[in-house]
Length: 130
Image 1 (cartoon, rainbow, N blue to C red):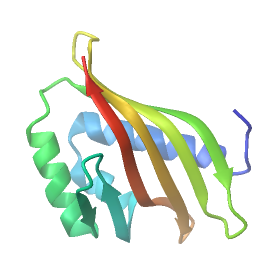
Image 2 (image 1 turned 90 degrees about the vertical axis):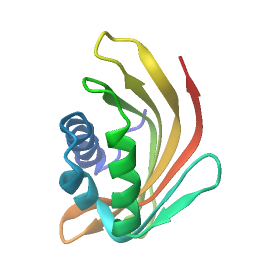
Image 3 (image 1 turned 90 degrees about the horizontal axis):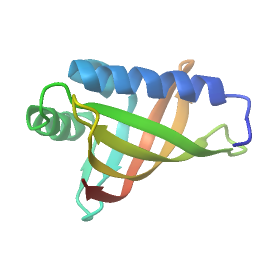
């Protein structure tokens, strides 16, 4: 993967996201999204704005078994002229005993706001189980 000027910041943000998922820390997860962010699921459903995203993450985490973690693997990063970063990668949920429960691809559009990188669009492209 080619390194771009802000790749370390995106790596750090992804680590924060994964840690917050493991700790079920919705406040930290929400702070990683812009106020007008949109999360789009493979079935076409979408959640626009932090309150809708909060509702979705609350449901998701309430239905995620204890000990299950999220693993994000960046596969590509592109920085646009306006400072926006497009990240493509793979995600998977891993059970406490190390078994993959669900997996898929994602595209995240990151924007820098007040010195912090936040997700503006989060597209879950496909998913599977087992």
